[in-house]
Length: 290
Length: 287
Image (cartoon, rainbow over all chains, first blue to last red; front, top):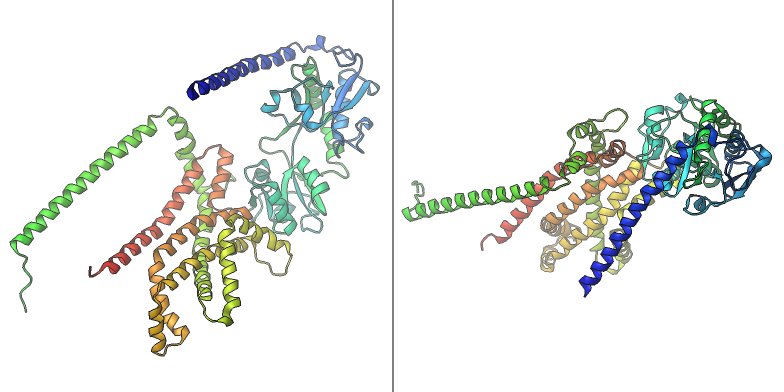
């Protein structure tokens, strides 16, 4: 009896798995066809197959954090992602008047199912797992590594990589952050290596290390929300295989190709670099360490 | 009184027979070991995934690079040097602390009750506390107090190891002390020895000899656990292996570090076995 039951459930599970396996390739095939058909003709300026004809609906979470957005108001065009979103809209032929912002939580945006937006911008890292549920545009931002410290630390006023060489630095094990220390800063003291960023943060607070290296979004979050007297020293040059941020679209969206093309153009003509400098490395952002 | 002992013919026969049997058993043991080894080898290398396992766990190139360090990856050997220093220092300190606590716990008389209670609380708590948590408390908690002259995290981590293993060793020492028959103490006292001299000359020599094997066993365990100091930030051999593993997506560095640790432990394990054997022989002498 038991064995027959086990057999049945196992068989059922195998069938379900087979069905899943059979489904996923079909879904994955859907995306390339959308991409390949995305030549100039299928992206008529201002007349794409959007949610609302003639309007472009863009999603992001509420609250929308600095410096990606400003004053929790995506509509003001301030903050890196707000600015990128309006630039993409313009490339697609939608003037700022025709952009509608909608509030979508982070998790809902990358979950499978119908979407309330044409595309969503909310620091989404492009991962193969998420690709199973949604489409991603070309990356509009490559995550940089950033040195952070606390007020009064001896590296708080460092301007260059050389200023950091005498510092005792820490990072999480096996990360691009650690690689950034050893490859770019090359400090004279052996860096401290921690199991996770929380341990590194604790060591920073204790003064066991002078500074820690984390990725830029984490740096903003840590210095703003987690660390008392947290200070961003600056961004490091690109290193290793960086995390990429992409715009999220519905799985198999007809717009994916058009949006990707727009992002690619923005990168090629240097617009993205300018926006990065303005909003991420600007006055209250993270200056660049050379 | 001059002639050397000449074994009788029968005795010679016995010796020859025993030698023959010994050779036979050695040969048989070698043969069966070879068969088992061959079966294991075939079983492992014949498995369908062996090539993949071999590539990701036994890559000679990566092993050499991880050992000596390359580009910006730390070398396992430089990490191991930290382990070795910690092993020696922590072992000595933990043994001293354990002995001290054990003596405190075996003090007699109502006056010394607070001391006994403290020592007992210590052994109870630190044998229960996982070492990882003690290291976190020491290496992240103590610097957080921002006291003047706080030692570095390596010293604090080492202190955590000493305190934890000191509690285990204290209990082993205590077991040894209590295994010495009370009549020994009574005899020593009746000879006019003070309590301190009784402990030093009568009880402890016997106690320590009796518990040497378990003491050494705990020491071997301590040797492995000094690697946990990497939680506090320093790069030891295992952390160096982990960094190499993350950089190469290959597990060979872990195998290299593992082999090095076994090699480090071998002498101590050998000594433990030898001491145990010697103690057993002594105990059984005359039977």
